[in-house]
Amino acid sequence: MGNTDKVSLDWSNLDFSYVETDYRYTARWQNGSWSEGELIESALMQVHEGSTVLHYAQSCFEGLKAQTAPSGEVLLFRPDLNCQRMARTTNRLLMPEVPESLFMNGILQTVRANAAWVPPYGSGASLYIRPFLVGVGENLGLRPAPEFEFRVFVSPVGPYYKGGGLNLIDLAVIDLDRAAPKGLGAYKAGANYAGGLLATRMAKELGAQEALYLDPAGHRFLEEAGSANIVLKMKDGRMVTPKSESILPSVTRRSVMTLAEDVLGLPVEERPVPFLEEVDDIEEFAACGTAAVISPVGKVRMNDHWYRFYGEGESIGPVTQQLYDRLTAIQKGEEADPYGWTVVV
Ligand code: PLP
Ligand code: COI
Image 1 (cartoon, rainbow, N blue to C red):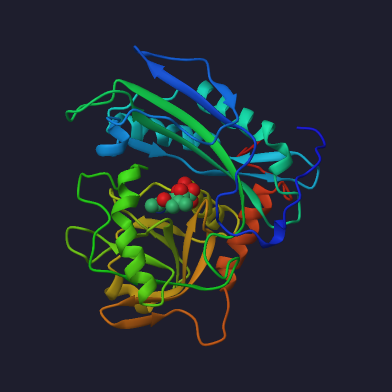
Image 2 (tube, helix red, strand yellow):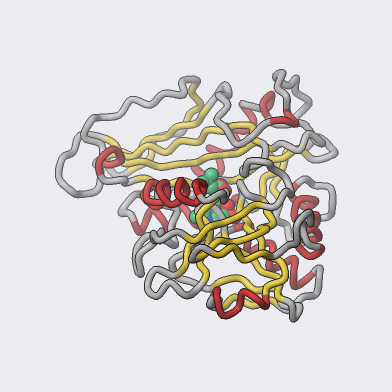
């Protein structure tokens, strides 16, 4: 992407809200094959009233970000992993796989066409990219849709959680499950998020930013937050992340654990974490994801008790800070990318 005049936005004060940009990408699956994808201007979709997406939640999505590097280049972060995850989700939901060439074309063309909306380097904002796939077309009974629409839209965004950036967030364990054993927890299915709305509201009523889920079978082991995975720096120096078959395999978490091991030299473990049994061993608690980046967690509420990981007035811990710095420096092209994680748009 070359030099582009930017639209006039207060880049440094964006939050995580939809901003309508100029173009989006669409492709349709009909009679067993994909149409040629194209850029369009309308943000509206016209779908049949019987569409499976409207009744049976036959819908999945992905989320990734584009960021401007100091050189002016625009970088994507590990888009291949989003494409693979979407393929896993589509197989689980009996939807057609979006071929990698279509997925990547959709992202690249949408970002390029909306170059004026890509936040400039140094603004602290990024361009959030939302590829999604929905079942459409005439239907009534419970079966896969006859047709599917793949779309990609983008929106410039700031921090996901209110207060933003590296401020501490709080989480609350609510008496609701996000996922069922062998259900959809490990997939980025739209249905998971409708199911989580009430838990998020209840967590907010308790003064937290988001719900924290425990394992649905026994409610003993840590799972994840409503829109982010969990990483823990333990007092014994280890970096631990919950192992579970019902959490979304996060691209950010995978990257953070690699950096913890390679760059910070910490022993890393992915294993079941019984929360109440280990809570006193946790030194730093953080939520991580594309939207959340790495958000330090100040306290967690469970059974009417707040478990604190930081004292009053304290801010982000040193390990979380280093991981945040290393990760975002690679994402923004400020530091060498020895892993080949970034892709130039
Ligand atoms: N967990 C859930 C439920 C999410 O929605 C997300 C966001 O995508 C994540 C974790 C973090 O995943 P990633 O780092 O791939 O964005
Ligand atoms: C993301 O981090 O990309 C997500 O999809 C989370 C979403 C709930 C905003």
